[in-house]
Amino acid sequence: MSRQDRLRRVLILCCSFARNLAYYRVGRSTDYLHLQKESNTTFTFWRAVNGNFIDMCVLEWCKLFADKKGKHYWKNIVSNPDEFRAGLLLHIGTKEAGFQKDIDIMLRYRDKFIAHLDSDPIMFIPALDAAKKAVWFYYAHVVDHEGANLAGLPPDLEAGYLQTEDEARIVYRKV
Image (cartoon, rainbow, N blue to C red; front, top):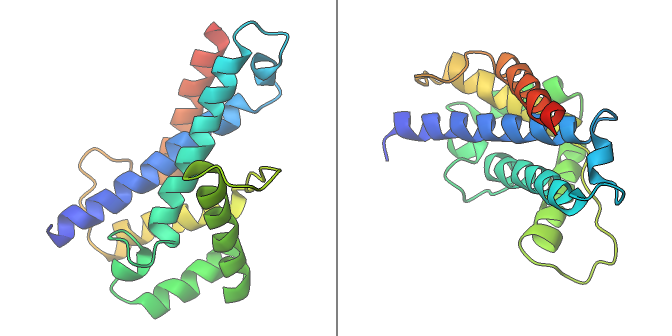
């Protein structure tokens, strides 16, 4: 696979994370949470849909930040890993140990509840604020410093995210 193809796939993974995060958060907002209550006749559908959105967020994020041998792992993509790491940690507002804790939480959720249904009695859904910041940083870095071809992808991930939130609201309002 060419470098340009790999960079493009990183951007696609970032967009997939953003899209699924937008769908998940709109579905969990107070305006639409009633769809997942047992009083709604289709609550199991809406719970499954919303659960799938969070699961995809975690899977995509792990490809970008946790799977060290993966083709899209940041250290295997960026030209200057030390500079990227420093900028990433600054952008997220944490130190290396804090980011490693975020990675461990995401991997635990992925490994214990998505890839396998292990023996943990309680599912701990990770908070995604730092994950979102990390993905936004990675996307911007690949666009601004690695020479990726956007070809139809948003130049600004936040704009694409907000558009996707609007799309989700339209769908949820129709229910």
